[in-house]
Length: 111
Length: 112
Image (tube, rainbow over all chains, first blue to last red; front, side, top):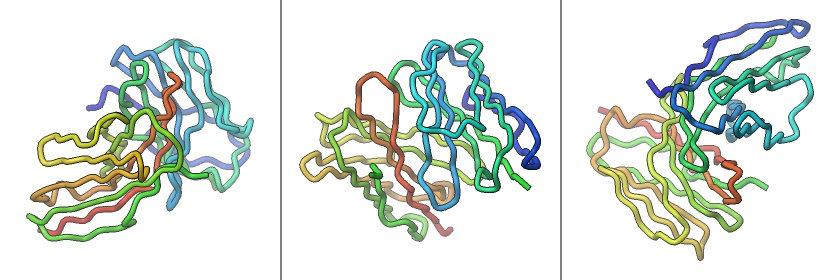
């Protein structure tokens, strides 16, 4: 148990669907992150939130829309995704610049 | 350009042997971190070494950092089958952004 919970663990969706990924951290951290992990590619940072404010958007396409209603919850809203968006999406949290704690990810498959 | 490139990409050893993984990076860093990822799971932080440190130990793990060569190594001594996982280095540039740049990782298989 890492203290970071992601749901769902697996998601299959069509290109025209709308779905959301959820991340919750129980560690009292102030920063939360979304990463994309594709086969044979390095982990890609997508978004960073600090005290609910977005501090980093790593040129992510607008079909990915993050939401951070409070320091414990982070969502990634998905809309009109492409097959190349199939990947493992990882959420992490940290206190300031301390090491990050990761959830087990959502395995996303786009049909 | 990509920070944090590990080599080898894959490593297979027998239980009890030592495993060494290397990481190179391109620009100045605040610290360098190593993470482990078991199949189907998230990453777990192993060890952090700051730019002014040269070596750090944690149990069977030993990390070195050579800022002049912009490289780091992770040594796992007396490996166990449970050490089978992917290992990633991540560089922190500082600036209070929390932003880490990860390498592609080394996949380690430890055979019983």
